[in-house]
Length: 426
Image 1 (tube, rainbow, N blue to C red):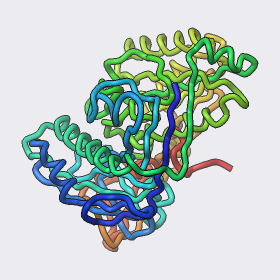
Image 2 (image 1 turned 30 degrees about the vertical axis):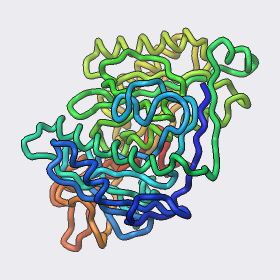
Image 3 (image 1 turned 135 degrees about the vertical axis):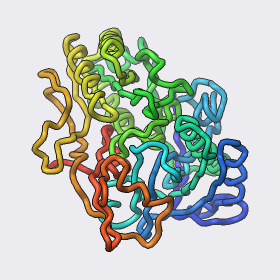
């Protein structure tokens, strides 16, 4: 399966009529977007704001971030099973408004939502301080249950990203990247002298606003399965979860998963990147056993020599991570794990809730309990009313001078478990 991603760089965003892209500037008609969103009867009101890198702006509570794209050739459309019909994606041509992002905010859905600062020390921890953000401030109807509230907000973000992506349909990309994964037999023959490497992506799927969707299906309903990596790059997976902001994968991160990109970059050179497996994270032990059994079985079936496994979230999913590690290793396959740590504010606590001797090669996204002081911003998009109740905040963490003390846990993408961030070890 071959996919071409054509990048149209966006260096600035402005309000304008009509919505369009000119000379690297994305002009946004706010009224068109509001009209689009208000077609959903679950939404009581919608506003559109813009936030650019370097501005004294804070966005909170952040729910999701989505990259505007459009399918210009090949089967399927953007986000199949949600805003387009169910059709296998991952081939053909897709245009990307690179440098633009749709961010959703408004009344809090669940306590695990985040903060994006566009400048200051907080901006150094979130990748979305570097994107030109079209921010949707959404107020779903008061009578909605939390899960209905989440659906309304999620769909507003996806529909807006699709609307903006359409502006790129007839544009000429500045750069094009091509990614290809051959069918199993052909792939084995092409690079038969190189180690066979796969990627296991664990998807947050514990329910109660901890959900991820694959072709529109809630991931807690799936068994581990094989995907072409280009399917993930082309919008097959979207976020619907309110797990801690620092280590959840917003939809934007699924679209730009750096593990997938980096494996492709070394494909055919250092190893044969031959497959991607997605698996879920479960609440009950029997479900964890089933999914980890299937994951290890698929790794064996694909005759993999090495596997990268990335987690999403922390605590309970640490057990899923260790069960995957143990069972894949028992198949004689080498593994590397990607996770983050909750080691206490002083860094002296146990980092993970579970452990196993097979987990002897681990990449850390950082300590989510590290405390940071965020300065007062000139403008807040959304509301700071929840900074004391979101995960990573605490009672009276907002000081009289307007500064806010939070753990990195509260900053969107700060300790990304797929490496889509800035923390590193030297």
